[in-house]
Amino acid sequence: MRRIGVLVQFEIKKMLFSQSTAIYTGIYLINFIISAIFFNIMGSDGTVLTAGNAQSFPIQHLQASFLFTGIFVAIYVGQIISQERAQGTLKLILTRATSRLEYFISKVVSILLFSVFVTLMMIALGYGVGMLFFGWGDTLSFFSVTTSGLPGVGLTLLSGLAFAFSYFAFGMIAMVVSMLSSQFLINTTMIGIALMMGQYFELLPSIKQYTIFHQMLFFHINIFEQPFDYNLLSFFILLAYCAICVLLGYQLLRKKDLYV
Image (cartoon, rainbow, N blue to C red; front, top):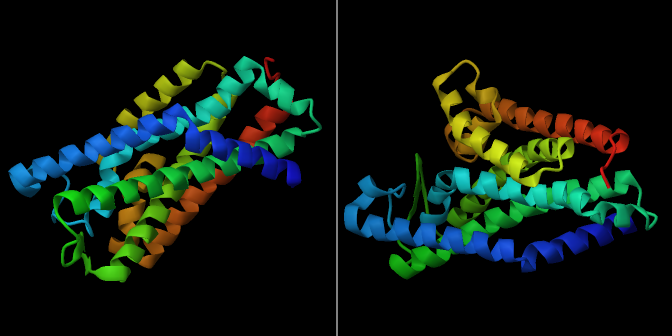
């Protein structure tokens, strides 16, 4: 466990202070500012916002960040899986009394933390941009939910937790893809294409709930809008994606030539 902790701490430091994280932050910030400007000019017809205030700004932008966040997760996973193997970093780690299982667990935990980190970063930027352009406002408005104050912040964080969980499940899929090939650019491109095409599963009502793309788009919304049984099924669908990909990913790491 100590070695896993050391590996995770190293990944956290890289994640917080990397150039990629600064780029992600800048992209979200620019996107949010543009959204706020368009709302001021065109109202709710020109943006995802339905209410112009800081209370509503972060939670209303989670779904709108579907493509950006999915690609950022895929890039992060590719950097810590494909590139480490291609650059020989993995060989160095495994020669220091670190087992493949410990290495694998550290990567799973790192992907989970990255999913949470990106979500919290989006929420923090959303509050900041919302305050700058609109002020705090009277109420949080999100689909059928209306609240304010600390309950609204709690609701936003709960929605963010659901959002992060669905993207963690997607990150597990990206991990398996990265285990299959050390070609970082090809892997990321394939995942980006899958994200763009995956949205069309929404046209298939009988299967859409079982797709990872539907959960990435709607799980953080459905926890407020759908019945408990529906959300429980969605939770177990995401859990199944995670479990299957964890088992498959570890088998690939344990048995496959690491190309280092």
